[in-house]
Length: 319
Image (cartoon, rainbow, N blue to C red):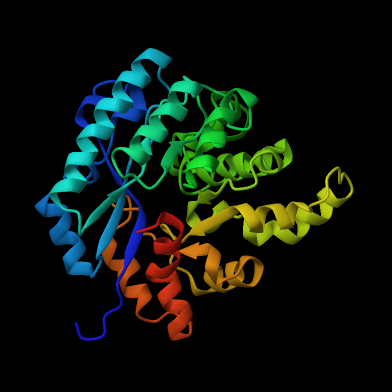
């Protein structure tokens, strides 16, 4: 283990038992092995981290989180779940940090819960799963959350969820029974989350809150790879002082979660710079071992490798 780099992974999920009771349909179903590991935030998880060489996980609540609930239920569950997650981190402070679950169906309360989680519980930001009851986060009803995150100087992690039912009906229904991953990591997650990112840039929220920081996993859900063309297209509609590319590269960070590709890494570095990229696994939906093995052969200088594996996360999350 001599010379092993310190590895921080920051899209690593768990499932709160009380929140789980409110899930229905496909949201309540997980593969048995995944379900078992989602609920383990103790020695079993730590042993898995040790076996792979993962030093610290930033824990966040698994999809769909609180985003499909009514406001009152989401408020109650957010506070209780975050309090329990605080106890988990306090029991293993050298192995875990946390992103808050926030009740986005009640935006003002979500902003308050974010502040409580950061200032009282020591959380490092918040993670939001997909749309909130069918609404994209650029809707101005959610801007109090962005205002508070910017004031607290903490990031918001935009995590995927199942696409809007109308999108499923129009785009995916012919194949989803045979290929259920079409709605998830194979395609649907990417399209839905990239659309969130595009809409945020167009909304003007970054002009309103210049300190706002957004993280997107899976190497930015394709946006860095399309950035030249997206930017070229939007230049025809330019309405502000910043180009789409400038706004994206100034306010967004990406992680490697579930995407252990040298080509993808190098492309993101060319578009965004190494300072905007952080290591993640996407545990337990992805095993720790493949991600950790990938880190041993990264085509990076020692300085850039250190930034990817821990330095950028330390700086952004104040670890």
